[in-house]
Image (cartoon, rainbow, N blue to C red):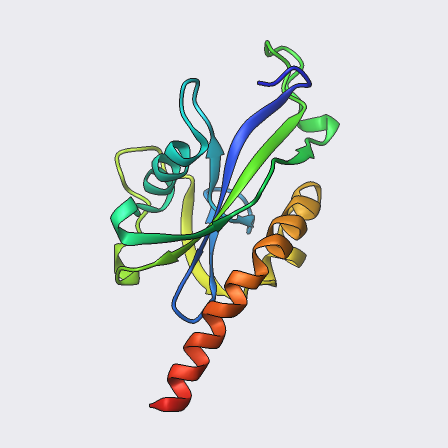
Length: 169
């Protein structure tokens, strides 16, 4: 937790060769979908947390993805008052996130939720890059917009490459 009460966290956008994003549904979340994300443990770098969370949440290893880009700084969101755990010390008022853009280099069949950890998701699908913006919970929307916008040039390049390959075949 930083001095302001923000918990350090990583956000993960996994793209397929076509430039579509992996979108996952939270267990018991009544149709609550999001990108994989998770906290950074004490003594862990954001990049170490990225690969740990990637495996814990969707079963992907460092060898099964390539890193395309990451956000330059921390993107913050505040939790709604109703979600702040008042009895916890130190008090967490939100998250500060470093976002990573990855490309899946393995068959999509390797994506899984049963990796020895309590599953956080029960379903996933490929969606258009901007789809999550209108679907994620409201309090995360601005962070998603900022992350997607900053990482968009790399996603566009990937999508263009895929379209050029389709035209040539």
